[in-house]
Image (tube, rainbow, N blue to C red):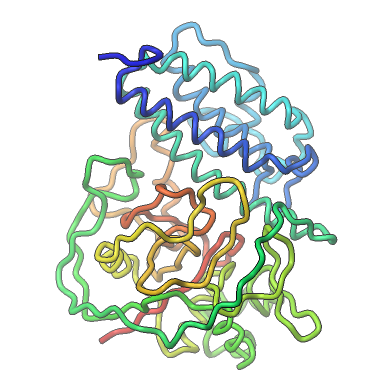
Length: 419
């Protein structure tokens, strides 16, 4: 059966998703000047222009080049410029020097996107199943880069002394501070963890397997800005008793005294966001904190961080995806928590679990096998998605991962305790 454009129903749905994902990336970059899109503010971040081109290179390389006979590359210099970390694809431009790519211009990158988009849409009716699966993977890959695009733009704007806003912020309505933490208790036992249904998941989310949990409880919400301000006021950043050794060395070496983007002005804590600098909202979830800071706060509170297995077991029982996530181009920030346990959106939640493979994990063959597996060293798992995560992108089994000192993403804290 074929429908409009000669597509089967499943291919038509994929074509519609491809078009929507590709359009959102362009819309997110819409407010940027060519200079905004070119500068690289630190090695962990990439220029907006590079993000837009890299995800285009992904589709061009793994779908068009490999599955469309006679396809001609848009520009044979681009694979060197926009490959990220795929060793199987050969040499590439150094990550820390992506900000030196003043050419191609932003307009030329958008032209590259249009060329590849048209080619993918034309090829979809005749692509084999393997290639359609790569298009599906590419859409999820692009959603990851949409979040990175926003957080990298935020870091870039924070480095500008005039602190420009990407979007005007909405008028703030005062919200009461939430009450004391409530607890979601678990008697423990054997739980099934990991992805196992026919819908999309990244390879690192499986195989599904049994895991043993001891009795424990997870907080029913994340820690707020107001609670974090109390940690600061109590000398939390000055007391080595609460810090891991590596964390304490990091605090001293970097002069860390508050979450990233926080500044105290005239005795008031403020934060910088995509809507510019504003006073912190005491009721909103704290964000832009590292694993080191999250662990120190948990120690100060006499509690701990959850394991990723505890988090997934609890989230699977509270699978409400209506939380604050990315729904289109516009203001992005964590919001005060709503009533009831919320496990998705607002802030990525640090766990105390190392990012390592599940039992039976095997990376895919070929270059796409480099997608996740080779990063399973020295990083920690985060769960739940954030206000910058495209809606529909996360699920209970989704595993994000960063190094313990990194905090330019929308990262926050949920506490746990043993019973």
